[in-house]
Length: 403
RNA sequence: GUGAGAUUAGCUCAGUUGGUUAGAGCACUGGUUUGUGGUGCCGGGGGUCGCGGGUUCGAAUCCCGUAUCUCACCCCA
Image 1 (tube, rainbow, N blue to C red):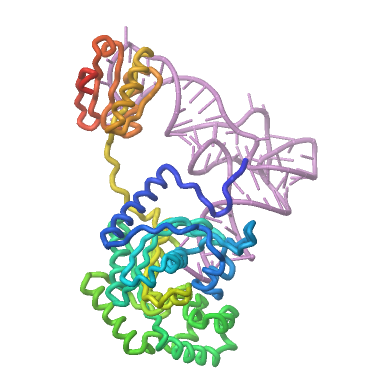
Image 2 (image 1 turned 90 degrees about the vertical axis):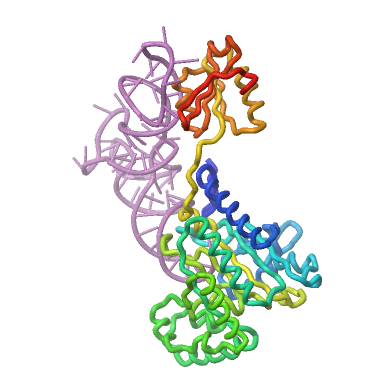
């Protein structure tokens, strides 16, 4: 027997219902915010992710499904969605077109990791990218959108906020931090020593409690912002407060992808185990330029669908459509014909075997049909059909023409 | 990549110190006082006990390997 690969799941039945319910509600909300769907390839040139996500990140460094294709191209399955959308944005010359472009997408992402709760090798994200708006109102709008989606799905969350600064203040801050950490180099963990070289900001995010103790008095990002960044951050907080969205400031929140600047946010759930980040995003004003486009401000977020699955509160399934059955072998043909006709307007389940009434009612109940319609020898005789409303428990026998 | 625990019927799980044809509930299916469901009664099918080796007269049970799942670390959605 051949099984699916490690960390790659089939989605069917109830899971699929949940999955599509999520996609539908998220899509609906994104469209209400004025976003348009975009689909980008699952396979991209490896260089795209090396440049955007960053070679120092774990995602690119050790988690990519990367290979050389038959044309000797270095390609990989996308590990995240933003890079592809930005690539498309530039390729279609929308950066030159100016104005505002807003997109949403959903689809499979691939990371070669050890699977655990809330983490798969092929997983699904729903994401949104907005180009051409430098106002912090857009950042707030992103957060409101995630909040709307989660609320609509009945999911509780905590919102964590931080500002990563911009080209103006970040380099200075980074130097300060490096200096601070260098002085304590002998006592920090191996990973942090590495981070010092590759991406020093990430030491803040280190899970090692000894390191965290040492960094407690480290210079804080938020206290080293330039006035423009600080103003924006304060405005953002104000907008969120005005719109009734609670947040926590987390000065150590560092997004794992290199392209973020200024606003960074993460939605976390306390109900799903250790992989608690259910959505994350922020501003990435430098990325378009970095990928050879004309400098364009941008913000976005992504939601991890699998992590939400068990948290989604599904609306109650109501009875729907018809179940049609025959009690007489001779009526089966007729039943098939009726189902074909009825399916033009309603959902119809049908049984091809003649059975007694009790069996049909049970079967109709099982598929959650609203009506159970049955033809037996009596009905066959006078060209009628017996229809029972399973919800209201009423029944009637009507002519086939009226059915 | 590291660590821990699992893997027996479609699903959830029993299986006593290794000992005859491996069980239950649910699901599926058939019958039922001859046409009324979600909540009756009686019956039936379905498992090479994850896979591959080994120990033994004998292995679901003990040992080794391997795959997958789960949880955690790391990282992230």
